[in-house]
Image 1 (cartoon, helix red, strand yellow):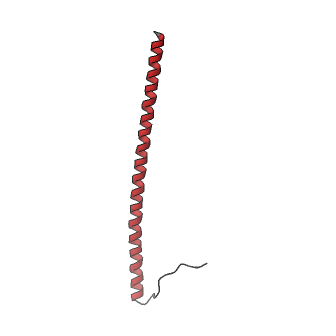
Image 2 (cartoon, rainbow, N blue to C red; image 1 turned 90 degrees about the vertical axis):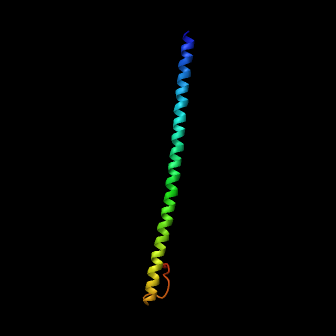
Image 3 (cartoon, helix red, strand yellow; image 1 turned 120 degrees about the horizontal axis):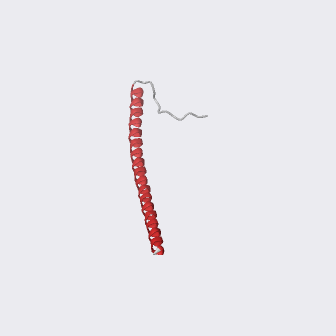
Length: 79
């Protein structure tokens, strides 16, 4: 009788351990999905801001060129 009780307790403990492992695995997948979503949003925002920034600087350059302030495109500073 005691062996059966001990075996049941072991089975319950094992089942609890398996349930816990499944939950932590699900949490890991959820964190991965959230991280992927954040990365996608960050990439899209950076692309949008980059396009807007490029457009703004191109507009400034064309206005300066049309007013005779600048006649060449900017170059990187040399050391």
